Length: 158
Length: 257
Image (cartoon, rainbow over all chains, first blue to last red):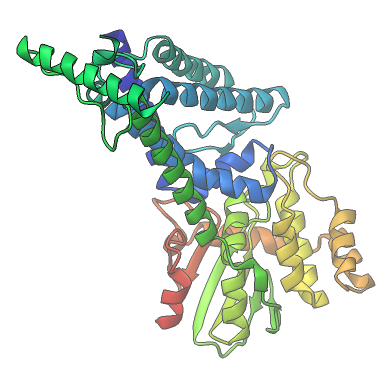
């Protein structure tokens, strides 16, 4: 039950953030560039791929396909985000994380690094729950894989 | 692990399923295409994730100008006050570009469309009025890079190196919050592009600051250039009407009329 909530919650996070990024590519580019980590060419590629990657994670979680793997990918991505925000904070940059659209430079004093990191940490907990307990209700993989995971389950053991 | 072993296993499985059916239980299917459930799930995940990455890369490539053959600027440049006009005066379409040299969206605009614009300028299809705007002066540390860069760009127009200088300031655009290029650095870039000794004096004197301020105030107060009552950069107008440059066909549409 908790897992189902976590799965759908994380799906909503990725679908929302992916959609907001995909509809405004220039904004996404500026947001990624503002972290001041990657060369310009790489920024363009990351800004182009990231929204679609987030949408893919969102769709897979929504349907409940490969929940544990997708939760692992989600956790990895969230760790990258937290690292990005942390380095911006540590270097004294003044940026918005651009987590859900927006992003880019902000006035000094307008940064919200603590809130952004806490929020990502919350999402990370959802992912962690799903990695530990990927079994959820209303998941397509329940039909595909039988009683979840190992292919050795079911009739084979008899 | 011979075939016999596998068929034996299959037979036992079939028997097990038959027993379950007899007990009124429908055995779970083994997934499609002979894949076991887990492999099928992992395959779907891989396909979806890879498809997403491919879509992202394709979109990125499509938006990027064909860099293999970046056209060289062969168009004339004239200046009137803080407005630098690129292209032939008789060109049928007028594009007004309001840019701030520190604005990252302006860098995005330049990177995305500069080759298309250069080609259209060379062909005499359009002329472009570049308005030197400084709305981000407070976003550099110390403040004022927007104005200094705009001043240097005006100097570059007078020195006959505007197209290359303009392109370079965007290609190497400093980050918001940074110091930006010093006047010495702005001078060195122009000198490297062939500007004469007067260029450095022009950059250092910052004599165009008043012109830039006026141009900025005028643009910001022009309702036709605003979105929701706000003026921002980049703002692009075609024959006086603001256009949406998120539409990658805006220039082709402008040329077609």
